[in-house]
Picture 1 (cartoon, protein in one colour):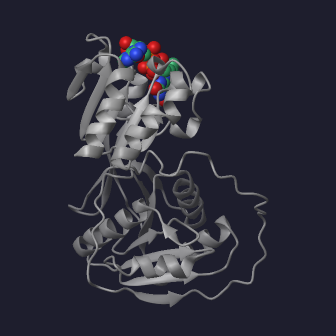
Picture 2 (cartoon, rainbow, N blue to C red; picture 1 turned 180 degrees about the vertical axis):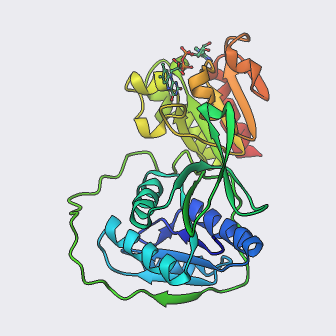
Length: 317
Ligand code: FAD
């Protein structure tokens, strides 16, 4: 039976992704209900720096491995910590890396993995709550057995700093050679902040008419909020912006406090990727666009006039 919760910490050269702080905070809430402990696992280049950042979160033990093998090290470290604890639910971010590490760990210890988790229940054992079929159905999956994995949707759980400092524990190096060689790391241009983690997403659609607005007016508005630029599939398919920005059924699922859809009609495949956003604002020249049905606020007019004015207003506020 699961009592302990283990947060896998995603970071880049020591800079921790927000979803991992959310995982650590949620881990505490769950472990307190289940009567267990909270562990965090940090691996790779910059792990010590990331572990220091984790100390501000309610974690009992932060397990650090400097072994620079890539995925294998993460899975080895999680296995070591989970088996030493005797049982554990591993929380990863519902991100590319989180799902990769989580599923490898699940295969290693022969447990199930739940992706895109938006809630948990703890009455009579722990269960993960996930939207399916684009959010039309909500499923609750009981996590029986000693181990489990849940990939949590970014921006759904809160990240709260506490005064408690977790104990840093070094994981001894396995001395194993890596079967994976990382030959190159390519930074995607203009993707400083991922849409999944931004608190404001400004997405553009076919109504933008070309690539330029994505790097000018939309980016400017996103920057004014400290947010990120997203896109509909129509814009991505047209080659105006890269797939990493796409929101929707075949793109990313986002739940920011504020989602601004600019020149996007609101097709169901787009809607399923952003419908859980707290406030949805649509800017569209067509008052009858389908997005009018589920936007909290529809601004009818030409995006090229409205967006720059809005950016100025945000900066002046
Ligand atoms: P359109 O539907 O063409 O809408 C453009 C909007 O811009 C219109 O409402 C128009 O009034 C408005 N507009 C035009 N000019 C202006 C202006 N100057 N100012 C203001 N408004 C203006 N779509 C996704 O987004 N994400 C997905 O992940 C996705 N996955 C899919 C998977 C499958 C299997 C399929 C079949 C489709 C998928 N789609 C997805 C595509 C989806 O069905 C729609 O085709 C797409 O979302 C439409 O994009 P859009 O809203 O940008 O374009």
